[in-house]
Length: 106
Image 1 (cartoon, rainbow, N blue to C red):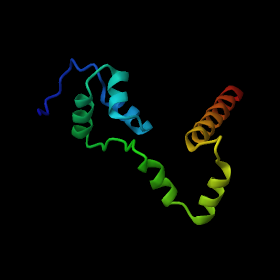
Image 2: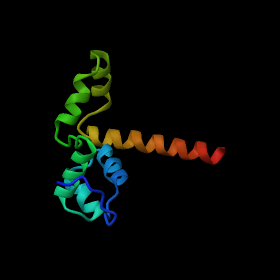
Image 3: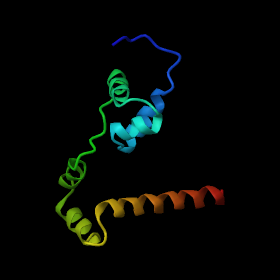
């Protein structure tokens, strides 16, 4: 692969890094930006950025890094009707709405 900058690139480095940091899969990033998955992989590699780990190990890494008290608390927040995915989405939406209210009040 060449390190020469191509000005006709439709996908910016900042878009790649931004979507990767959200935790999207390489296929989803490629679909979102209208390019091939190998393009995403090669560009992230050229930037020295590790692709996000979108496998189940993501939550395991978080869980295993928590103290036992934190794990117990998290487990009490979840259940059959509240999987971790829903819980995290709700936390993110609460934070987003709080920041929107704060910026409107300013």
